[in-house]
Each structure stands twice: as C-alpha cells, then as structure tokens.
Length: 297
Image (cartoon, rainbow, N blue to C red; front, side, top):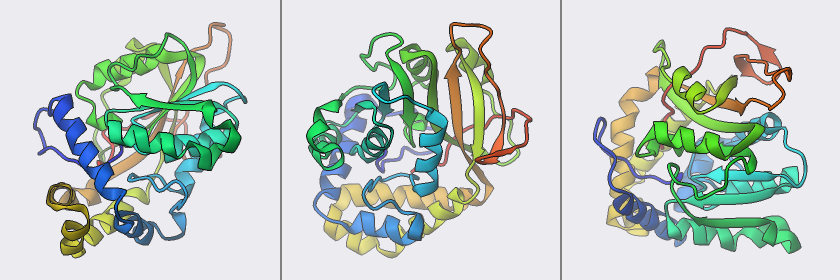
C-alpha cells in the first residue's frame, strides 16, 4: 500500500473502494514511466535500493534493520502488510530464505508484485504469494507468521486499533511485527495500551533521524517536476503527489521517524523479552520510549 495518495489532515479515511482506486491509478501510472523511481533515487542517493524500487521510505539502512530485527529462521512465513509492488517483501524473502505472503489494498499492486517473484526468487518463485486484503482483515490464520513488516502503510489504515489487533493475531508466539512510524518531536506516544491489548510488547525503537530530510528532498523534487509528473503519470496521480508534498513540507522539520519492533511474547513466560530504545544497531539508550505517527508518503 506504500503508494502516494493523501487525505487532508484530520479527514476521515476514504472508503476502501476509493482508496483502492487511488492506489491502482498510482501503481498503473508508475509502471508506465521510471520518473518516480528516478526522483526517489535522486533524493536518497546511494541509500536508494534500485532493485526494490519502493515508493516509500525504504532505503538500504531500513532493509538492514528489518532483516536484523526480524531474526527469522529459513522456511518460516514472513508477511508483507501493505506490500505495494512487493519489492521489500521479496528482497527480505530472498535474503532470509523465508516464505512470503504479501497483501495490499490495490489489485494492481498485488498483480505487479506477483509478476516480480521470479526476478527475486528464480525457480523458487512459488515461495511467495500476493493477494488483495486490508490491514484490518488480512484473511490469514491465527499465529501463522513468524514475522510481519509494514512499511509506510500502517498510518493509512482506516482503523489503526483494529489493524494492530489483526496483525497481532496473525503473529506466532515469539514473532515480530516491524512498523515504520513518526510523530511530532517531543510528543508523547499513545499506543502502549493498544500494543498490550493486541498481545504484544515493544521490543525496540530504532531512530531514523535522516528520514524527514529525505522526504523533504523527495517532496521538493516532486514540486520541481510537477509538469513532468502530470505528463507522464496523468493528472490525478500527479495531483495526489503534489497535494501531499505541499501538505507535508511545512511539517517535516518537526517530525521524528522510527522503526518500531513489536513482539508477541513466547509461550514460555520465562523466555527473555528485552525492551530497548536505539538510535542505531548496537546502541542502547534503554528508556523504552515509543514513537507515534510515521512520516506519510
């Protein structure tokens, strides 16, 4: 679901059919041109993972964090929630030798992700499946996944509490849910109770201090290339991107972006479940402070 469509701040989420149509239009338009990928690459520089080609905050540092924090064994099931065109989940499935179930609100995105399986997984392409589903209703069995990644999609859920509960339901004991989030600097996060109610605990908070500046570069490139976006993507997808850029640019300097790791507790109550807050791999600060809303994209 990590495509570019934005509702006005404070507005109720659009019905799923409307959001699906918006995502479909973006993914179909992006498939016709490499302009969006080139703008992301220009904004991220060497941190842009060309093969993944996600329309999101996904860069090389984030991929590394996801792989390290998931701690998955080969052959287990990874879920890519709001998978978009599938690059993040497929890269992780190949790197970790795991099975993959990806879902997205957009049928166009799910079809594009399915078409990319052979590129990443070769003869093992059947190890990955993609389908249409929502964060609040994944259609997956209880406790089936040992890892879930949700990159730049959770903030777009129609009901975030229901989405968190649903993703927690899908996790196996000891499994981990990785979510990108953001909030205003200095604001108190308010989701600890919801995490506990969903049967999970906060395990890590990895700071992403360079992400807001990256989004500022992305948005300024969109504005600078407005005419080209309209020409190559079409009026509606381009206007959605430009509206988002103009809404978000004034807010980015006060944003804090993080990667949140939530874990379903192992069935053995004596198993360790350390909680920390980190500015990067291997650096503990230990105050357990959680973030809030992620930088939208």
